Length: 309
Image 1 (spheres, rainbow, N blue to C red):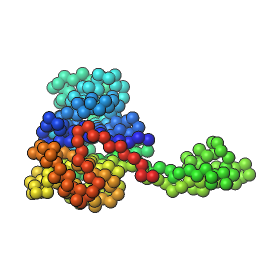
Image 2: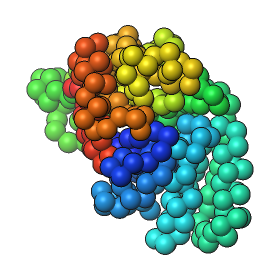
Image 3: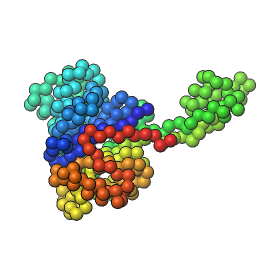
Image 4: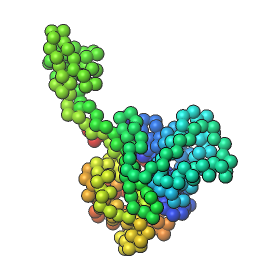
């Protein structure tokens, strides 16, 4: 089952010619989930040839312009593709007002259902087939939340040789055991799934953190992430300014990844516009000194998220 993340925009505060505002799209087996929608989101979706019609839900971190200004265009764009399914939008207080006022003032033509859900705390917001998406609180100048998509554990590997040794014939009984149900053989013996299956295997986890003061508890929320996308807006020399603005430095993002345990890759995002592409190397070096598996995300960069086992 495919799981991959696309960075649609990597910048913070203001868009630059080569850097749209923060937005990440997650694709899981053809279903799309959008995390934030800054200015330029539509452009990256188009250039990556992603099917915006398949966006099932949008998760907004907080109500600052550089995270929501791309949403009206997404809403209008979705009316051009004969969308039949509802579009769900989750976010902190005032996201519903923003969506409604945008529709009214811009006189949007919307030919599908939009379901907006506000929340004010940590919560499981989405339950899908074998996975869930939950929110967790961050600390910014406005109510702000991170998100984590977590898959349920997978069954262990099926061992055909063990099944044959126990007298289970090839065919439907094998599928029954793989589904976790015991089977009864013709001679009356009962074979349990754990007799032919290995230990359960882990699912995958994606976490998204942006616009927050550094605090250690974030690590607990993102522990075990196969991919953590986390803001690293400033270099370490500007830590005082970052704290004043309630943002993080790149080395603080790396500390979160290191202290979380089980994080396989950290992708920095939401760079200050003060940094040119060349300047971003400083942020990368500072983060890698703490967490070596750190990459600088760039607009339209893709991250396949593979199973560990």
